[in-house]
View 1 (cartoon, helix red, strand yellow):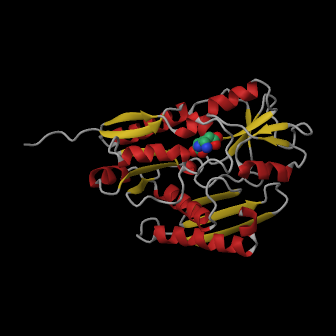
View 2: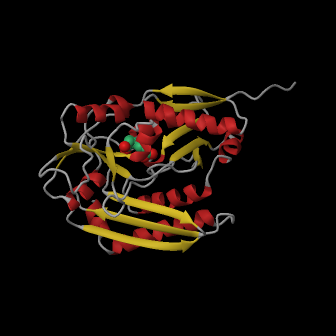
View 3: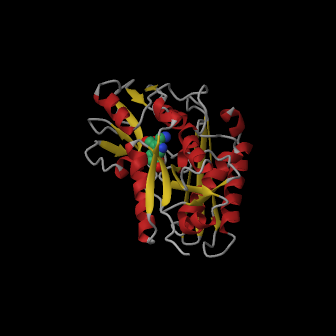
Amino acid sequence: MSSEPPPLRIATRESPLAMWQAEHFAALLADHGVPTVLVPLVSKGDVDMRPIDGTRQIGVFTKRIQQALLDDEADVAVHSLKDLPTEVDERLVLASVPPRETVADCLISESRWTVAELPQEARVGTGSTRRAAQLRRQRPDLNVLPIRGNVQTRLQKLADGDFEAIVLANAGLLRLQYDHVSRTEMPLETMLPAPGQGALGIEVRRSDSRALEIVRRTNDPSSAAAVLAERKLLSQLHGGCLAPIAAHGVCENGTLRLTARVLSTDGKQICEAENETSIDLDSDTWETVAIAAGNELADVLIEQGAAKLIR
Ligand SMILES: NCc1[nH]cc(CCC(=O)O)c1CC(=O)O
């Protein structure tokens, strides 16, 4: 007896950004004729309002959703790739990186200040050591202060006058269609993004060959190669998402260009490097090539003394 295959169950956190991302991925699958159903889940990272620091664990946003896959409550996990730890659970597989969104961070303030234009000693809200270090490098006078919560909560704290400005990924604001939020995009020369920023990462159970085959169809090889190199660099530096490590890969015309930066918390010390590698996205070697690019650049940074900035 034959029957229709059941819809793929997509696990997502309940924040508006996470829901948008899950719905976006559901639409990509619908383009391939695959029916889906959303499974919203509450994660500890959304409930816990303590500032992000050493007392909190890496992967707090993504663990709950991965658990739903392992418990067979869902078949597909949609993550913001920059929140997904580089240590992999062998029972899961990163099956797709759909076409990447813009990677840049932006400075959000009522007056649309650039970092250079911010008032002396302005209070700038960010929970990211990477953003804080790069802000302090450019403007040592700034009061960089911790901020927590989802995008809406952070914008509210800015509106309440807790800060003169905050920093957020432009990708999130564009996804939420927050065109009204007054902001300036920060140049990559002074604010290099987090590994994986602006990209989604889609996980399935390794044993689920049906979901694996379907989800793989949404993979964008040039986005996947770039983020694979960035994430390899991060894991090679033993960075995790809490270290001041920035990386940006671009895959274009058969070349993967990878740029990375490691800073001290105060922004005074910096290690910076870039490499270019030929890559053939139609061959079956592109993953190996991207991984090697990430590893090599990490080694260059370590030679410059990056390890002592990360510890
Ligand atoms: N850590 C929270 C998070 N995870 C992904 C995004 C934005 C979207 C993205 O980078 O893909 C954000 C908010 C932010 O950093 O502004």
